[in-house]
Amino acid sequence: MKHLGFHTLRDQATDALGDKLTNQLQEQLHSETSEDLFTFADFNAEEAERGGYSDYSYWRSTLRAFFQNKIAVFFLIVMVTVLAFTFIQPYLPGQKDPLLIHNDQWGLPLNNIPPCEEFIFGTNAIGQDLWARIWAGTRTSLFIGFSVALVEAVVGILVGVLWGYVRKLDFFFTELYNVLDNIPQTLLLILISYVLKPGVSTIIFALSLTGWLGMARFIRNQIIIIRDRDYNLASRCLGIPTGRIILKNLLPYLVSVITMRMALAIPSAIGNEVFVTYIGIGLPVDTPSLGNLIQTGRSLMTVASLRYQLYFPVLVLVIITVSFYIIGNAFADAADPKNHVK
View (cartoon, rainbow, N blue to C red):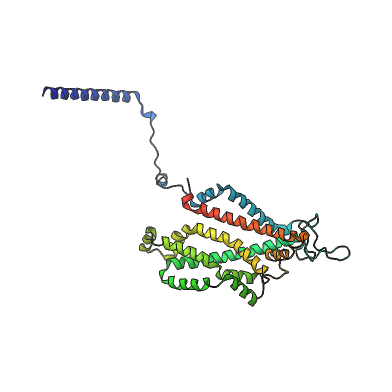
């Protein structure tokens, strides 16, 4: 009991001493401070509300992640340079007509002239400037590639989203896919090229007829994965229209897939145009294209002095194909939110 009383007295003394020191310290602070040293902080309701949100931007983060890939940036510069020069080349001074046959002073065609000062890439078998024909052919092939990629994107995205999200249409689109996918694309290209008049529009139609199947399948598979997630279920419960759910909830999730497929569709379409022309049922001979140029150069491979007529168009085709492939894959990776680091 004595021991307990000693501890009780000690605690009471400590508390009393602490209260006394606290009171003295407060009195000293009040005596030494002035209200002029303090100002009221302004309150802004808009700024306070904004502080609850993140400054994250999907597209800004995507571009930042893309430009961190030095190889992709290099090929992007190469691709932009090639595309820009392809379309401004006809307007540069001293450029020749790709269809014009050049003759010497005696009226004979300047055929198979190797690269020289006047003809940078030389001439072909009938005296046409190969430099002008390569860039004209690049424009034609790029137009085909971009047109096919645009059709594939529009049709593939529309069909893929409806196929994956609207359950009642699943059976119809599945059977349609099975029928069209079992038709060999090469056979289809050959048949259409034989039936219709050879030309740019025929090539675009033939390549676009089944080219959207791959895009639609990829998007359908992705839609099935995310269509029943909580935010989509909540949107349906709130009565939000299906079109708005597709535009706001589903398509942003598919940016990386769409970007990659479109980037690969352009060189794929150009390669198919080259293949169809290679087997002799592509564009007419008088229409410059990379396919026509490569087909002509292939027939001259046995003559060493004329192989330049194959090397130059193949080089342009390789640059376009590799650039689009690397840029497309890099941008698809950058568009994935998992790769966004703040």
